[in-house]
Figure 1: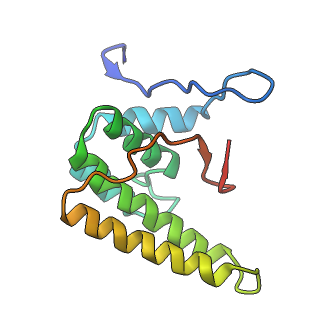
Figure 2: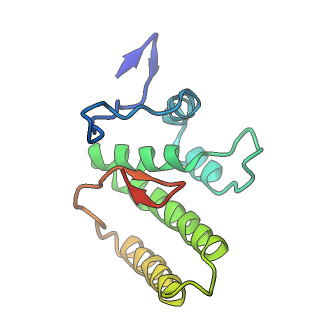
Length: 145
C-alpha cells in the first residue's frame, strides 16, 4: 500500500469479540512504516538491538509484521532471517520473566531451546518453516488476540 509516496503497514483485519477492528498504536504504525523502507540487513541489525531506549530499537510488533509481510511476499530469505530473531527475543523474554517456581517453567525453557535449534536447522537447509497461518498475538502478554 502506498501513502504519500511511502510504504505503509498492512492494515489489521482481525476483530475483537464485539466485532471492532484491532488497531495498532500510532508509534508502532510509524515504526512499521519506517522498517518497511529499510533493507533486510538493516532490519536484522535493528532486530538485534535489545535496548528499548535506542532510537534504532525495532519493537517486536514491527518484527512480527516484517515476518508476516515476508510470508505474504514469499520472501524466504527475509522470513528465514527475521523469524529466528523474533524467537530469540521470545526465548529471552521467557527466560527472564517466567519464574522457575512456576509449574512447567523448565519444560517451557527446554521447548524454546528446541524451537531455536529447529529454526537453525530449517534455515541452514533452506526449508520453509511454519507455513500455516499465524493468529494475532499480543507480544506483551503472550496470548492470542
